[in-house]
Image 1 (tube, each protein chain N blue to C red):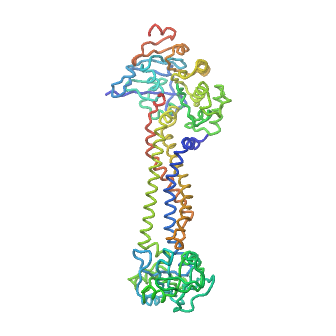
Image 2: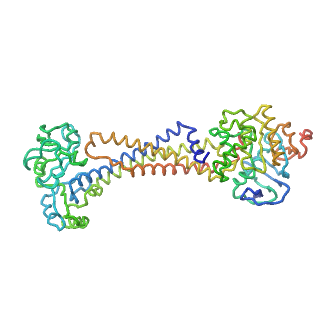
Image 3: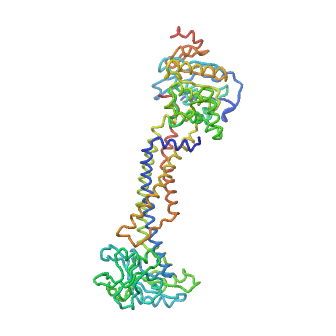
Length: 368
Length: 252
């Protein structure tokens, strides 16, 4: 028998209580995995979208929102002429309610710019020119809207022909409705307005240096390396903070659950602890036993929580409000972080019960 | 304000205690123990000496202080005032009573106090965790101890599957786990039928005899006390008789 056997045997003694405590902590960890996974997925999905378009820098006006605010299209000229800039593409992007879908990404792109190059036709064709009243749908968007080539899709008040289904090789691209920039400007009443400029730099150019230069000449917007523009936006920070806040609240409930369980356990086992002291166990070993028990609760609660979190994310990402907009980022490091949080939570939850256990009088062993 | 001089000395096994040549395992002088800020006086000045290898019975009615005395001898509690020496050496405020309990003392309780979720052999292994022995050594020694109390057929039984007498024999095996010098037994036959009680008493007596252990046994049963070579009779926190248990009735 090892010391770990002693610890686990104590947890098995009250299986229902141990199970409920595990459930409590696992719900908190599931919230961490689901919310942080979605939050990080927002960044990784957009970053992947940018990479698939070959964009190095995004110039936009995100400020406090998740979608960039429009600014004059003439800004592009100041960016395009900077040294190190190889190509630019004006974009107008918005989140819009499209027919039965609550929120869809609608992306108007400067006709003929590099942001069209990554789109691979799955069926149909690309629009013939910038003025054709037509749209191509990413594969996921077509699936969500249940559209095929030859159908029409209503954007704002106009019915546009679906002329093609495209694979953009990124979750965000595939979840988008893509049309020419002038058409979207006209449909949304944003004539001569754009919300982003995608920039490709000359190979070998220092991207940070180009960003700094753009920020100098275009103070009304902000240039960031592709992907970072989401992470550095206030909107994302708010979402991230809310995700962590909600998660930590859930984890706090788990902490209270473990603390309560361990306190009850210590209270119930006072005489047993006294017996262990009477047969020669040091108080430090008793403390270690309680801390190991709570750490194990945290560990197993964390593992279960990760599984529940993954299931939760699978459900959430199919929710109407999120479908096609982001791919949750459930990399192994998030799961390890979640389990580590759970173990730390377990140990912290066990500190007070462990201290209480160290106060048990060994003379209790001779009572009863 | 009085301070207890709670002194222990030694056995070679205990890292906190040093070897001395005293013929006594315990020497108590004016031991007092108060509870509830002095409202309850469990011990009111107790003096005695217990020789190494002696079999001593502590008898007396409930509330006479015998269990309190056993607790103090086993370092489960501390006296309010007085001096207690262990094997002649005085140590003020033993820094680690756990070490003394682990290596010098073995406890046998009236209610056995086996841990219910551990098998017989695991219960016997429990005290060995502080001894830095390997898992294999612990198990081998525990099985050997269970064999010595004739329970080799019950090593993997949980306490709930053992009779009262068997549980107490497991408890005795556990008390011997770290080869203590002194066995402290609190009403060891109190929860047993007469046949099991006899078996347990025979076992304790043979341990005392064969291992030359000091055996201190608390009981209210004079037939049990009669097995001892000496008895301390306690009443109201004082020793009222110290001598041959056969002559104790005249002092009741």
